[in-house]
Amino acid sequence: MNYKKINKLTTLCLIAGIVIIGIVFRFSMNTDAVAYLRIAQYYADANFDLAISGYWGPLFSWLLVPFLKIGIPPLISARILMALSAIFFYFACDYFFKRSNLREEWGAAGRLTAGFASLIWSVQQITPDLLMAGLLTIGTAKIIPENRDENGYDWLITGLVFGLAFLAKPVAFPIVILMIGLFPAIIFVSERHKFFIALKDATKIAVVFLLISGVWITVLSCKYHKVTISTSSVIAHAIVGPNANGGLHPFSTGLQPPETGRITNWEDPSKLHYNYWSPISSLSNFLYQLKIIGRNTVIIIAMLFALHPVLFILAFGALRWFFKWGETSKTFLTALLLGALRWFFKWGETGYLNSMSWFRLILPVFVICLVYLPVWISIKDTRYFYPALPYVFSSIALFFSTRMESWKLKRPGLVRFLPLFLAIGTALPLIIPGVIQAHNSYRAGLCAHKIADGIIKNKIQGNIAGSGLIRGGRIGLFTSFLLNRPWYGDSVKPTPEQIKTSGASIFIASTGTDFETALKNFNESEDITNQISDSLQNYNIRVFKIRKSL
Image (cartoon, rainbow, N blue to C red; front, side, top):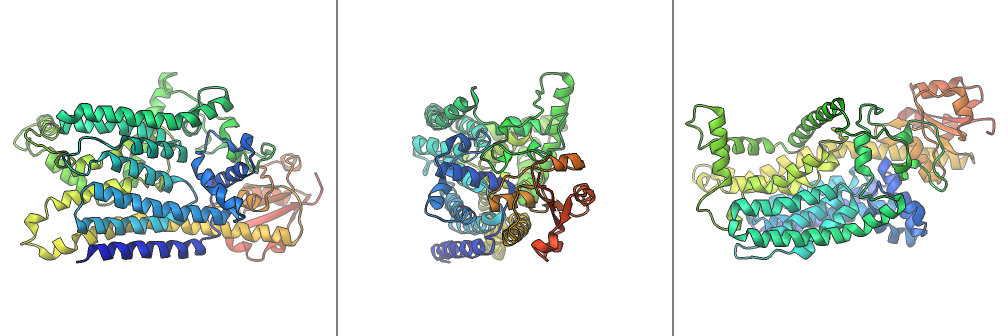
């Protein structure tokens, strides 16, 4: 079978598919996209005071600036950048599979899996997660030497791409630090004679990474007048605190004007009021933190096994392998200790490639999971685990490729098609939630476009408030972005006085909510939904106008 032709065909189909699917989903919007696009516009306008934000990584917005500068509309610019991010992630996975020394058939199957995933993820949401995943994949691939005689490691490129990953998304900072520590640890237990070389190169990687990230950290520290790596971590921790409002951010829980010059306070939530807390300030907080970690552990395990069912195979193989030496033992503890010793100290094994077993290739997945344990995470946040794909597939490929030789005579058909079956089995669970979220984002964006067009057509002036929350996002916020008007937040059950003094004259509400009821009962409001668009009833959205100028 000509795998080179298959790989070229996969690449061409991916590029064509990304172009087509990008055109179809050109109206798609999501809440984070509003922030990234607005920040990109501030950079394009050289408005650095509004552009610099400790919550959002700058790289995604920087990459949007050239498209905005040549006059491409913001959403189209974002769609182009997401397409390029998907292609970059695909080639990053391809590079990782090659560095992992996968056989041709498994490499082709891996590219097919990465191609399917990249295609759907390119329209799932407009965020830098796909870009960060590609950078982390390149960085970890560079750590793996191409042959067992290679003594040095490409520390300069590794540190560079790790630094760019941090600029793409701040959560990459702890992930990279842990991965840099993981690298010499693996060498220590597998090829101890290379440990000091690995430790020296890990130090060089860390220095390059800190030099690149240090520039941005300095900028943030100057803005916030204290040492600031990012504000996203403390905010993500705050919204799961004992006094938190169910994981909601303040920008969407009250009628409030945004900072001057902004469309929404979500562009820099660092300045909003959060109930920050410390797990070590009291015993009750410490126990509460343990509860959050336990909750997140269940969610992450469920999410990983749902996205990658092949992990069940690896888990079974790991347990079987882990207890192989202790299978004659009579106690669980003895089996555990003997199995652990056998795994960590494989006397007589030489060569780095031999030591890079399927289990060690999946260790970065544990690093990614560890970072999200103490903070807010939802079962819907599948994009956080984009980087897991190359590690999981490489692990499953190595797991089976070492066992297929003994199967060739007994099950030749299975051996021939197993890579394809596992590629499909890996890709389908990944793309199903992506398709659902992409559809919801498209539906929400299309609704916002219809409202914005109706407001322009009817020449309705005024600022906008109310989320109009449906699956896919906040219609009110998206409409404000499309009209370039400030968004004045939302409220669960506003009083007539709050509506009157909010500063907004257009309110968007979901049907059946207390917000809609409050607007209906407000004697100065007028329901203009049918005037805006006769198809809004399909979205369960109502639009109100305040008759009296406030």
